[in-house]
Length: 181
Image 1 (tube, rainbow, N blue to C red):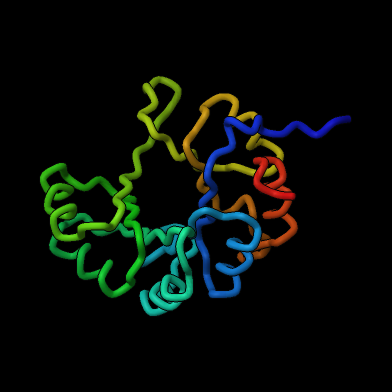
Image 2 (cartoon, helix red, strand yellow; image 1 turned 90 degrees about the vertical axis):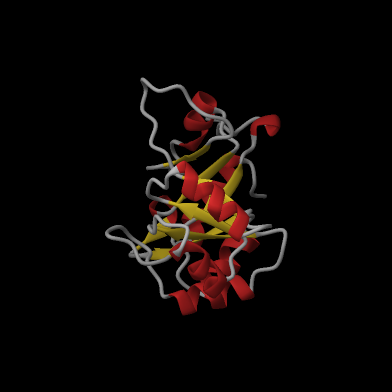
């Protein structure tokens, strides 16, 4: 049986989220990750690390790899200070931030990318560019890319074993996406 892969023209960028250490960051980058997700304090969910660890990982990550600070904060007053402490290249806003606050954030953080998480179900039209996340594994990612044709892929648990980045699962995932050897 021939392994299905993503056609070259449809290969999305891959962001590995829930990075917990400089070692995990190096592994993700060596295997082709375009971005690292660094999870700050959240009301719930996996992968939370201290702002000090986020800043350390971000300081050791060179372009072109992007570093994403995942934040649950919702005000333009608190978010810029957090980003300045963590020094990532991009903010990922996991909770709704009002449009007026987004404009203030853009003014306060020139040169920092801002990504707002939205939840889409089958009834919604899909905004562009889309970064697809949620339940992705090496076994289902090709069908997900075929269905959605995303700009990027964002994953955490699909490449982890016992809470740690699993190089074997990551390798299988990157091969399926077309970013591995």
